[in-house]
Length: 454
Image (tube, rainbow, N blue to C red; front, side, top):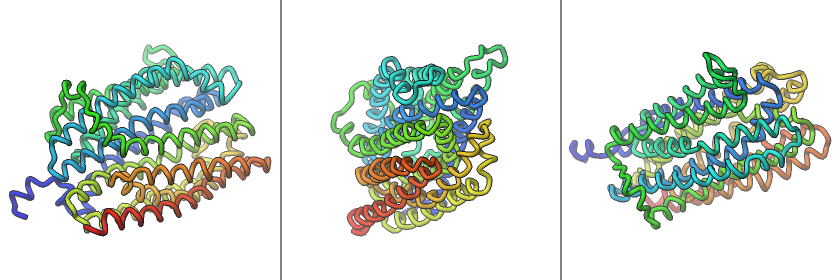
């Protein structure tokens, strides 16, 4: 390759692989860490209101996660098509992917605007009969759904930056939204600096405010700093069925895979609420705490997907192999840190959330039991990246179905029949073991089909 060709080649095809993964993933890992910190801080502030307020946010999470699934899954499909098109030097298709992705963001917002108006209260009522929790949960959910325009456009603009290797710019957008959330959470919840005291509603307003500002910044960065894509209002408003089909060929399995997480959390809320509201609140606290370790691995995964997709398009087998090995090693190291934290200082982590004695009694063994599955989850997440990058996301869907619905929920229910809530938490390790077997089988199948012939 000549010097001129090297200069024209995207860095995903020429930069040393380990350096490239660090370059692509670390900015996203940092932004994901800040996002995880926001999730934790948000719940810490909500917990200061009351345990019922914390439970309300926990019961709201499945529907909120479904909204994120729609945005992220669409972004995954757009990301894969974008990166592959750039690797093949098909710049027209790359632009079509970007503009049709923005059109789909508008569609997603309209859907969840209607959900915010008509669905949120019945959804909370299906999980609890406590009036205080129903009111707080409905308030929080209706706000984040009805003002979700910022979320969907933020996710899409960040994916566009990631697809072209502009991870630092993507990090700037995500950090801006998360930091604004952290700053305005206590201000709007407790009524500081002249703001009204809004309680749980304040947490929701802080969230959507941060998302909207991040979306505006993401638009600016794509228009002025992302030279490989060309966003046009006329192209956004004239979607192409074939491009949307290609986006959702990868995106729908990813949406369903993440939506399965919403079903899982909803069912777990029902199982645990049968023991007590406190048990459900512990589950919510666990989800916030685990995000501090899972989010960086997802950031690594987000950085890995365009690298794998680009080098598949460029037919560079050795770079794909090196990227996978390094990413798995890094992911396991991150998750081992999480396992150690949950095993050694669970009480300290729970007290961050104003934990009562009952919450400590339930939560301490819960965190220690659940943490055993973290390293297995790390391997599964990285192996799943090859399914998404190579347009084989239906394998991720099968693994996710096996883990969260076919295994985890039935096992959790069976263990709950023992009458001891501590037994329920073992369902995570059992489900992850099954998922690991499935992931390994599908990974080898996709590798033989897509990578080995290169």
